[in-house]
Length: 233
Image (cartoon, rainbow, N blue to C red; front, side, top):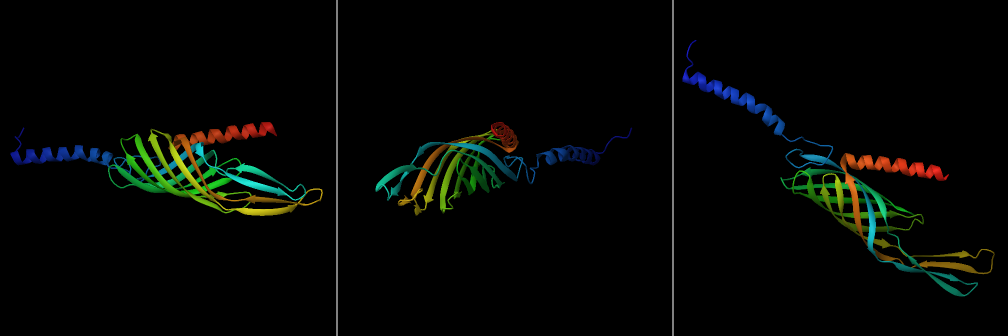
């Protein structure tokens, strides 16, 4: 066997080192896009999907008034437009640095008597691969059966631990006032309904899931709700 020359030995060592390092560097390279949230080490950008429920903690209200000319009497009613809801957020987020990510989402909130759409910006702070904190300011638009113009804004702070999402959300809704007069049923006067409108505020607690877990929970929830509804009809 011929002895290796020093130069040949160095080239052989360098070749083997590069061959071993190439697969490792390829594995360490982050993906350009991920279908579930991930830190910069694994994703340069990712899809954000969340399914959440909102439960009101503190809320303001307003007093609407009804006048009956037949009885010459006024009646009052406490009204609240905002309330508990189930929400779905869908959006795109880019990891800007090793700690910070920024993106935007659109959302749909389902409530008892109306639906609400929203758009929000998302600022995410990564603390580890599985723990992050989001700050999401946005605008909201409520689709009311009376077709009254209702818009406002929201601010949410949510913690993400694995696929679990929990936090607080503040909503401020600008409710447009209105007056409507109709004939009294059976004749004999009119009924006038007056809603003064104003800014309605609500602080709610949120709990839900993101990514694939959120999608599975949504599907199961829809199936159970459909089964319950069909059982009532």
